Image: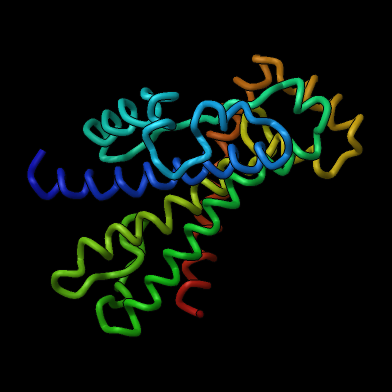
Length: 228
């Protein structure tokens, strides 16, 4: 791996870890506001990545770096614990807790879009001839590393938001469904969908379907970005 690839990997990992940390911290904060201090007790109501890394070292460090080294792509995961008894007692609060993670990714994507448009206005950035996952905006001179970082931050957070909102277990979208049901029906749905077999099937289905959903959403987001 040459120095340029190492630099790309470092910038991508920072954006990746920031995105995961904000996602899980949002889960933990909303759960605390809703009466469940499980994640807060573990120190996860924070934008400091250290507690999130300690909880999921495989998903936050080992797998992202390994997949980048082997495939030039970065995959990983993190998690915030919650009390299942609290979820059963307050299924709608659990739904808001689940929605908070994707909402944090949406906020990060909007902030990245703001930086991109500011950079275009100041002349630091330019609109590239072709848009890719890694290349939403082009940096002028010394601003190329920043352009890469902001591009990844924008697309990574759209990806995390979209993927986690898929309404299948064990993704956040499965719990968000509870917001659209009565509390008793939400409890019944959680009991039914928490089975490990459904979680495995849900991940397989999400992985199979996601590509067809994500790229049109990303194209729409980029169109919106440059329309604004």
